[in-house]
Every structure is written in C-alpha cells, then in structure tokens.
Image (tube, rainbow, N blue to C red):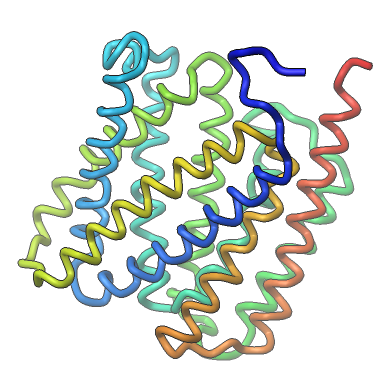
Length: 299
C-alpha cells in the first residue's frame, strides 16, 4: 500500500528504467571517448558540467523553497568535497576511455561497488562481514586478471580506471553520509554547481574551437547525462535500490558493444574472465546487502 506522496513500487518497471539508464550512460561514454580524442578532456567535462549546473538550477527553482532551499545543507564541506571528487572522477574516467578504450576501462571500473563495501566500515561505521570481505578479495583477483600481460600491462594507464573506481566509491559513500540530513535534491544541486565551478578554470585554460558537427555530439552528451540521471532517479523511486542495482552492470555490456562496433576495440580473454569475476563478486555483495536490510526490518 502506498501513500499519495510515494511512488507506487514496481520492481519490473524499476529494472527496465535501470536498463535504459545503463544504455544511455554507455552511449554517453562512447561520445565522451570520441570528444576526448578530439579536444581537451577538461574542456569537454567543463561544458558537460555547465549544462549540468543549469539543469540543477532549473530543477531547484521549480521545487518548493526554490534555490534557497537547495543550497541549505547540514554538511557544506562534505558537499564541496563530493562535487569536486565527482568532476575529478569523470575527468579521470574519460582519460581511461581515451587511453585504454571503453572495454578495458569499464572492466576495471566495475570494481567500485566492492570498494564501497570495503570503505563503508571506516567511513560510515557499517559492519562488513567475512562474506563480503571474501567477495572483495575475489573481485580484486578479477581486477588483477584484467591487468595481466597484454596491451596495458604495467602501464600507468591501466591504473586510471582503478583510480576512478576508488574516487566514485568515495563519492557514493559521501553521498550516503550527507543523506542522513540532506535531501537528494540538495545533494544533486551541490554536485552540479560545485563541479561546474571546480572544472571551469581548467576547461577554460585548455579551450579550443569546436567544429559545428562536434557541438551536436556535445549537445547529445549533455542531454544524455540529464536523461540518464532522470531515469536513474525514477528507477530508485519505483523499486528498491538492492533490487535494481545489479542491472547497473549492464553498462559494461553496452559499453563493450560500442567499443567493439564503433571504435574497433578487441575483447581480450583475460579481460572477459576478470570482468566476469568482478561482476559476480559485486552482485554477491549487493545480494548480501539486501539480505541484511531485510533482516533488519521489523516484522
């Protein structure tokens, strides 16, 4: 039973919304790789965050309380850190797309849910049992398999998506931390504004003229970012996060398909095996989290 203020729960719809989200985010990553090959990555990320900032300001202006309510946070320093970490993570990940390709960058990046599980203890004070620690170690083994001898072995570029995974995990944990007192709309607003302000000096310093056709791709990138986040929010609104989150791994599948078909990348055997191990370990930790959440609910 739902109240008039709650979205009706529909797990099937939530799953389909998550699938749509991952497809859009994968296409967004493909466009980011293309633009990152042509122009400064800082400039591309800056324009994307300019659009993001305008988008969150328009949302905040239409919400109850307006912009003043959106800026009111109980954790201003943590919100500042969140915004700067996210814009830095996106920049680092685009470097990974350019230097490694979509397939290998995403294969390593899938480790981030396991980083979240590992750091949830020291940052949020959550208990991480031996089962989840085992899954984290198994996932780490999968990452090591991905980084075995091959194109990226012992290259600093192989560590770029791993750094992005740690940064995104930290961003996610800080988001959960501020959610104790700040609403999702407040965090969304701070993310867009702080990210745009932080990246602008670097983007302007590396600005180069963009071809008219590439502005079309840039507009598509910005639109996809907004649509993808809207679908993600809708997915979490109609279904439990633990039920839909495993389907977020489909982004690896979609991004790999784009890498193979559009950019002519190759899928090495060790990357496929390692990514499979990391995904399996990640799904297990999500399942354990769901079991713990159900056990904690009152009968």
